[in-house]
Length: 340
Image 1 (cartoon, rainbow, N blue to C red):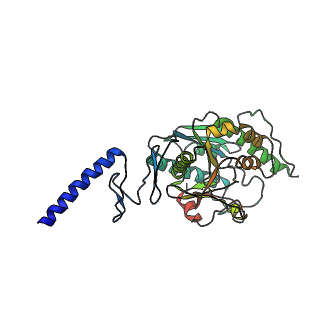
Image 2: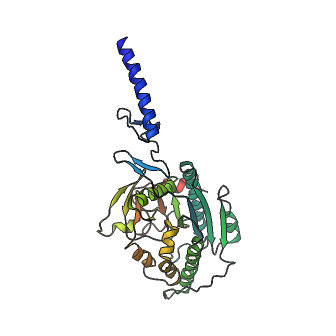
Image 3: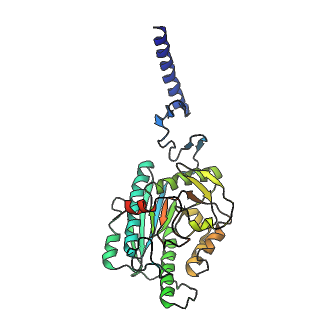
């Protein structure tokens, strides 16, 4: 009987202690069961609280000082051109529209997941299309019914800018590049109206369901820790492993992140960063460089850019391209999960 009373007393005092910790904002860890009695969570639950604190087992808690209010997702689409500067086929060898539709489907699914984890976040989609046929244009407008959405048809909008492309001795490729640059220019111009985070996406990036949430968790955590705005990628590019360069490795919510100095044109950043580097970004859209993203890479010399480990999206280029398939992820599963 004494032992039973002792257990009852222990249970009573434990409940009181948990309530006190809850009021004071402290977390407790039950290392026997790997549970968190204050927040009533288990080790495989989301332990961070959006906009308030980041928590990683083993590292502890860090307060969020840079709360993400919203994210504008701007997707540049063109279902008529397979690869802008190549005649090769993409992985799985489908029509270009198939990659576009799976990209949009993956972003929609990921946005629903983000909304569950960040209930108060504002999410808006914008599609900037050029060169798609009318049937595909109509399809593009059907993906995001549950979110604020805008469709910009560049075939009907005059852009007061004529891109300067590099001579490739191929009129078709040069025309495709000029068209792409107009779309990039419009995406930067539209992003000036966005209030917080902006995610620029090309229409051949198929995302994991958790991609957007992991990126926003990372943005809040690392911008708070380092007290600066960031660039965040969704893709672990294979070409970044072709060089022996140092990277800092950081712990995010469920993924690791590493510092990188290069990327392609799918990236997330803040409106503040866009305004800060306005001239270089617009110049990239107006004047083609080699490599095309040279201006971005120059920006990364002074800014923090993070890439996920492993990748949160797949870039559906040719299987032999160093800019394409990320290592150590199930590429076929991501493709099949987002069938439209």
